[in-house]
Image 1: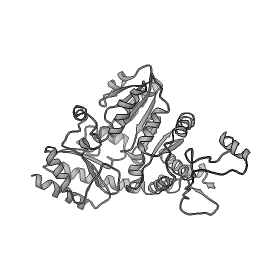
Image 2: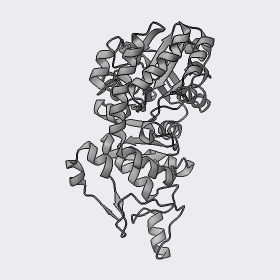
Image 3: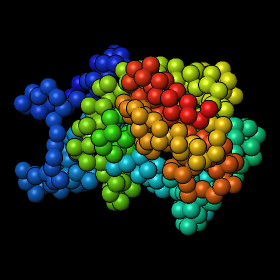
Image 4: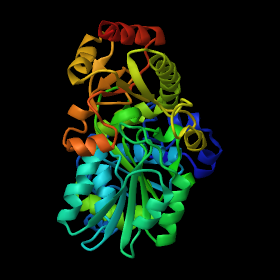
Length: 400
């Protein structure tokens, strides 16, 4: 199989790399990336098998360890992110868990933002402590609170920015500086910002994780995740963990995600334009109490968003002037927009976080994060903006 040279890749622009980065063509010379639906591989001799397993000669040995199609996806995403290495996983949550557990031991300490996706919060608040790992949660962007959270045994810092679903932003540069001074590693869940809008490694992050299920696929077809970092971390700590615990991405899903990367920038750019328009429409609607969107000047961290992100993103959260029952009535009256807990899709999707993605949290915990019964999260898609605003307006109208 043939690959493009590193020198040529470095000269290509982002749009070109999204289409051609990491391509490995077989001797057949196929246009589309080849789909290798195989669990294992054969060797010319027993000696070759021995050398391959010892890592003395290049090649694949088992698709739980590596696969040509998966490898193409990993290389393309690494080029886009500007990372030395990437490993794909079966889901985004597998990526989060593996990025943490491959480097943590009993007695270690982790710092995390409290504003997290529900499953991420569960890992940090419930699972890690079972293994003797202490976790400290920081509530907001107050840098002194982050500074005070560090301990001698702090090994990792984990955060989302923007957060799910409250769209809270954290100052990556300042937190990265604190993390590096302590000798810990900074892990960023960058799923809301996408690699198109925000590059955490450029702000000092050590590890970036994605749910590729979201914008990277972007069409509701498959699950997937990814972890990006230095080659030293990938080879020395992450790969042995993945190899022996098995959260492998299927070759078929990797092929779908490769196709998703080809149109990622086009989709995200248009979704962001639609999101701005929707956010402005909602902000002016009398039935909407508050809109939370990093691209609006009303967002408390608007200036930080402008420094860290290329635009406000594809997600708009907003509060209605109504109780849960009437919020549900609003959701049920939508005709075009679908109720779904997924996000980053070409179709516009809406969910009620307090009863779906964050329902495991206590009421007190939810309210401390701004996740009240009146909050809804809207993932803006690619439909005509006039159709989206018309659907929102007619669903809001009976509430007047």
